[in-house]
Image (cartoon, rainbow, N blue to C red; front, side, top):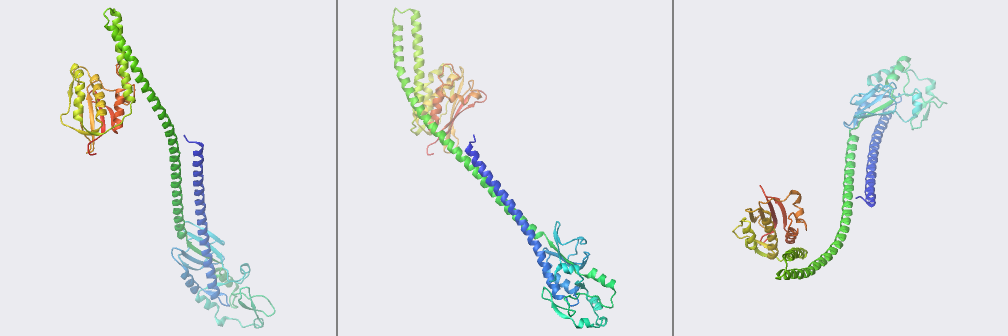
Length: 494
């Protein structure tokens, strides 16, 4: 029965386990978020590094060599971590790239993070140290050109002559500390990449549109964060498993403590009841002992009346009935006193074959009267036992067998070794046997299937057997009869 206190303890253990489980789930999700954020920051750091590279490579013309830029980008590629880097124009087309070719559709993608099963793509706007919004809204565009196109566009022979406006330019510094030269008397910055005088407007806009730097696309592998997440998950699962084992262990420990406390309480109550039963047993034994004296007097008076010469046959018959009932009651009282007597075992080396012979000699009249065939081993067999108690137990068992078999029946007495230190004793008969439902009940006091029996014979046998530390059982004797077997009988030197 689960008490209220037990429910409270089990509820606390369950609540602690649930709290730990929720904590581990929250921590695992936090680790995943931190890993994702770290990967995004890594992409931002790469974008910032590329921005510094582009800022160091661009010149007054606002152009960057594609070969040098891709070479610098290739240095940052690390298979399994950084898969690809690309610089995109405003339309989403690749201007310069390094690493694995981009397999995603970059057109229409805006700045942000794009996750798929194996990769993370981070889109960052190019920041070269100027106001980003101003760069996007104005024509101050940085252009990435191959070397042959740069040579073609910025050939000195194609440059227009300096105008008075350019000659009168002043030095101006922007927010990032870069020095520019603008028209004197103005605060305007010139375009980084300006249309040469010989280039058509459409060609100029086409170059700006196709080769102008707009954003970075950094492709990072999610394998590192997947591995870190899996490792953290296994760690959390291990902690949850240990917590589960601890909770189950606490549950079992508390249940054992509760059961131990309950058993201790029961033992105390049983001890009190046992003391009470002992007192009642002593009182009952004393009462039985005192009852024998009046019975002996009654029996003696009945014998005197029966022996008188002038007694009538009817009175003589009744006095004989009184004598028989007094003898029967006296036998029952003697067995009860014998059963209630404490068993103090005084072990010694006993020859079991000799004890069997004495028991058979005591029952020889009954055995001969029923013409019973009795088989008794001839070889000696030494055991450790209290000889007097052993003789009494074997006498009761053999007497039961003699009473159970029919005229001309068979009784077989056996003994032997089961282990080098233990032996067994068997009493077999071919009587009616014991019903399966009675095989454990027959050892209880006052349980008997014999109308003339008292029901204490086998109870005394079990009492003696248990006092020696042995075991007794009632078994079927194939093909017919009963078998009483005593096991764990100690041999000399055991």
